[in-house]
Amino acid sequence: MTALAAPAPAMDLTERQKSLAYLTLMVALVLEIVDVTIVNTALPVIERDFGAAAAQAQWVAAGYSLAFALLLMLGGRLGDSFGYNRMFIGGVAGFTFASLLCGLSASPDQLIAARVLQGAAGAMMAPQVMALIQVLFEPLERVAKLAWVGVIGGLSAICGPIIGGVVIHANPFDLGWRSVFLINVPVGLAAVVVASRLLPSARSGSARGIDGGGTLLFAASMAALLYPLVRGHDLGWQPWHFALLLAAPILLAHVWRRTRRRAEAGLSALFPPDLFQQRQFSLGLGMALAFGAATGGFLFVFAFGAQKLLGFSPLETGLLHIPFSAGVMLGIAFLGRKLVTGHGKWVLVGGTALMALFAGGTLAWIETGISLRWALPCLALAGTGMGMTSGPLTPVILARVDRRHAGAASGLIKTVQELGMAMGIAVVGTAFFAGGPAGGVGAVFPAIAAIEGLLLACLVLALQLPAPLFPEQDA
Image 1: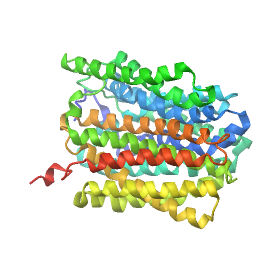
Image 2: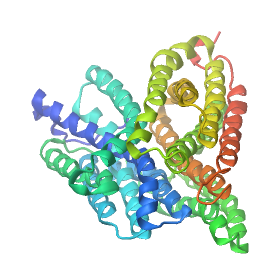
Image 3: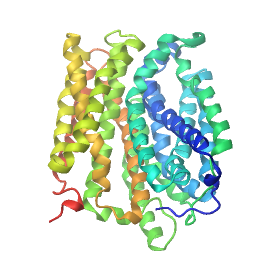
Image 4: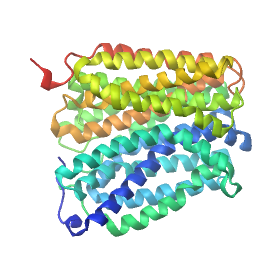
């Protein structure tokens, strides 16, 4: 557990004030998670209003996830060093300002820049939520509070497209797609005011500083990988695109070497390299990357294709996500986490296979336009498969991690999941737009192939997991 520096005036708060502070943390959590997927429903409208290119539409979605993923661990370290409440308030204020800039954007490039800023601000506030819950509540109180974090976070992730469709359809003040971003502004301002009054002051008593150079090097490696994947098709695959793709693994190798050297010297590092000596952790992290990419790519193509190819409105597209969302909740709450202790890796194998089968079936419906009665059960079963895999995946990855590294490991998992979402939008979105003009007829099948390839990689990794998964089950 992280050591906290005194003083932490949480004890001076009444139960009502603690509840308000907790509610403020949950509001910020919802804002950060919803904004990952809410934009998917708005993308076709944004593309139409701006006359944006396909790559620009991808970057509106991927720019947020990429900035969030690259800076998430840095945000955690900054909270340790400068105070969780300060970084939370600054992150919420920055997120609110970036949301305003998104809503006022006059061009695709301005919107992309604002989305990147929004993701960066989200990375500053998100890591502070768990730390502040630790400060606000006693150990027994935290159990219920942390349980609600999981429930609210899961609901936020799958309800983003639904909320986006409803907001665009309601069209408050005739703002169109801009309302998806501007709705964050009053909520964010209220959260800043309440947080300034109620959140206790605390920071880590064992902060070890920040590896700024490692963070920049990791960001450069990801930019070298993702930029050509998104822009290569539009720009005709120039030689420098391939040079960047070749540079990406070289830069990642430098990141690894730098991290190991700094850890051995007792300096701050991006993550503890010792984590990767645990085989279950390494395999699970690979699964999180591949599964996150498949999920991000699927949701992007589904929301975009339903409107562009089948003519659904943003509201109708949002409502189409309901059976998928119901399946996800079923998979998480009643299948994945309850079955994994008895059936181990086969729950992850089954969930991944189920999603692969029915996500492909759902996107085939978008390509062919056959009966909606085909699509709805496919969506529900694809969501069930997603929940069966995503629900137990994090506990499985952390099952054999030394408790000394639990915080760093959790941050690394979240980073990889978000990075997977950004990569999925880049890779699957590129396959989608390369398959036809602006994602036209014939474009869905390359996207299906990309998603199935990612899920196959996830399935292969799941089969390599040891048995049993949890140390309590060791003979």
